[in-house]
Length: 281
Image: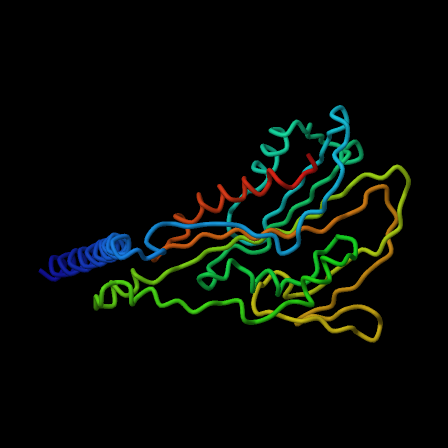
C-alpha cells in the first residue's frame, strides 16, 4: 500500500510539472498572439547586428590571389560554430580557403566571447563595450575608441507588459516580457604586406576579459599599459608580413519570452549576413 501511495504521488507530481510547462507554453503563445493584435513589436521575433568595431576598408586582391586562412574558437559556451558561416561566406565571394596560414593573402581569426541573454533593446552593447581591447589586433583608433566611449547607459527599460491588455497572473506577465539574446565575436583580419611591417599589438591577460559584465573605461598604467577591471592589457612590438586589423561583431535577437533555441536561427541568419561584408570584395 505504501509503495502504491508513493507511485501515485510521483505520478501526480509529474502530471503537475507537465501541466505547469504546458501552461507556460500556452501563456507565451497567448501573449504573443495578443501582442500581434495590439501591435506590440516584441510579439514577433526580431533580430539584427551592429559592428562595435567596424571592418577595415581594404583593397581586394586579384582574383587569382583571393586566398584566406580561417580559424575559429568559441569561448562563450554558447555552442555556436561560426567557422562554417565564415567559410561559406568566403567561398560564395570567390575566395579560396587554404590550410596553410603562410599561403593566405588574408587571415581571419575569430573568437566568440559572449553568447547569453542581455537587456532588451541593448543589442549587447554593454557587453561589447566592457570587453575592451581586441587581443591580437594592432593598436588603432577604432580599437581604442571602442573602450574610451564605453558607457553604462545602453540598456533601455521596456514596459511591454502594459501592452498585454491588462492581463494578470505571473505566467502571463512572464510570457509578455521581452527577452533578448546576443552573440559577440572578436575577429582579427590580417592583411599580407609586400614587406614586413612593425606595429604595436594589443595583448591581454585580463581574467575578466570575456565576462561581458559591466561597462568599463580604461586608465593608463604607470608602465604604459592599460588596466581594466580584473586584469591588465598591454601592447607589444611585433614585426610581420601580416598587418592585423581588429573587428568586433554583435548579433542579437529578441521576442516575448524568447528562449535561447528560438534566438539561435535568427542570430545565425544575421551572422551569415555580417560575414558577407567582412572580407574585401
